[in-house]
Length: 196
Image (cartoon, rainbow, N blue to C red; front, side):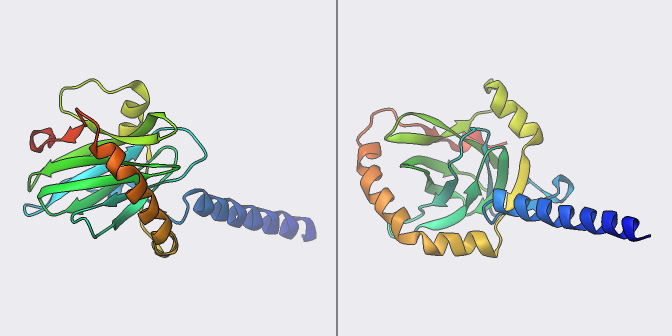
């Protein structure tokens, strides 16, 4: 009897440890069961699915810059995670921040769903970048796999607290890397026609 109680207690403790580790691994984001996720955009909004299959220990944060003054926190992405973000249609800009910052201009149409992958950049000044996924375009195998099976996440209190705590650092990276990005020719753009 005593041994059985010991085994039960060990199972409960192990379960708590695994759950706690899972929460830490998501950096404060909360896992969402796939059957609770809707990627369909409401008639008056656009939906953007951000996904990250890039494997590295660095956490990336994703932001919307609807105006030059505003940094609106979308969420944190780690390896093999994805999230759905609803926003107003029209012209906007997204930013991904890891060791550096990178950007993506977008023209969004109401009622449409868009897909954007967080991928490795080409240099230390572009540690990560945002890649639009276009209908009919063949995506690399890791991105296709992520579209099928990456963990869905959403913001929780801890991720929102992270965003508040790191707001000054995020702003510094935005100010440092945005002029370099804007000076580049042929920047990628998420087009209204990229929606599904």
